[in-house]
Length: 50
Image (cartoon, rainbow, N blue to C red; front, side):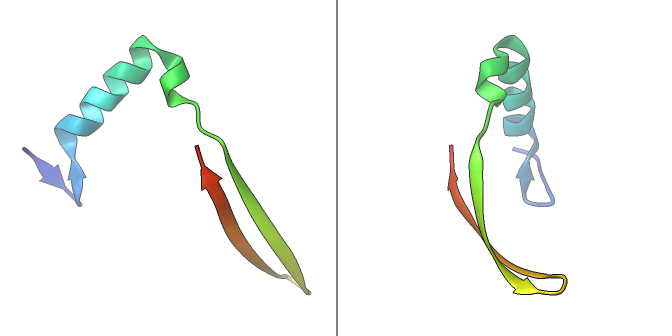
């Protein structure tokens, strides 16, 4: 197994090939909740990643 910058290169290649074969596998959805703090400040928290 080749790992570069903590990435399993073969797993990445396998994932890329799977998404190329079936683009639906590459879809992702997520949410972000934020609270305006005034000025240019926002406190944000990510929601569920599907």
